[in-house]
Image (cartoon, rainbow, N blue to C red; front, top):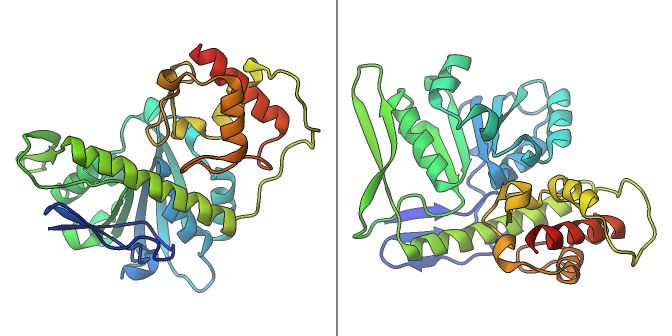
Length: 310
């Protein structure tokens, strides 16, 4: 049986849920924390919305801590790295905290080979990883192959990384050790597991949004524009789509976005009125953006999505 615990510092909103005979989803109990690992030297690795627990941990760093942390924030494209202003402000205040953004479209996937080249302390550090299951599987295998003890690798999965069952296995990663040996790391998936992974990711993402809204200063619109009923500008809406982080959750080919938390906009093809209503009031795991975006920005992003999917 494999136990997967939900992210971070949230209240016990989920009851223990058994998924077949393969896995148990617990918590969240707040066990994934820099305060629950023994070493002061730490390596944090976030993939996409896996930044959520690390943001909470970074906000809590203070004079009482004596940590030395390198934080690698992995995203698809540079513009998808959210909260950077706040993270850099924390790094200015707490000098033992360093940030490295890793955009896949420019740098490729983060590898332990790169980490070992940039740091000589891997075997003596606690490594904390939060992100998609595939990323965690690959990095965990590479870390073990590089000599990092399993007990020093701590992970929170936005999905189920390793579930048993009678499915075929395919290599998820091929790791070459210094000795020349090759380790092949299997990955198992089934339709039910993938569906449960997506549902779990939606729950965790919603929890992260709620915690972020209650612990961070509320962002203010850049300009206090009056409400307008004028048609939105699709050209301006493309920039809003990127800056609001819509691509982290939704697929939209015109924007180069391939998120899988929210609906695929290319398939749904919503009209501008529908997009404006959902962005304004929120729906499902998506929070309301009224007050976070101006009426003009909401109108613009609605026009852009409608035009791009027409």
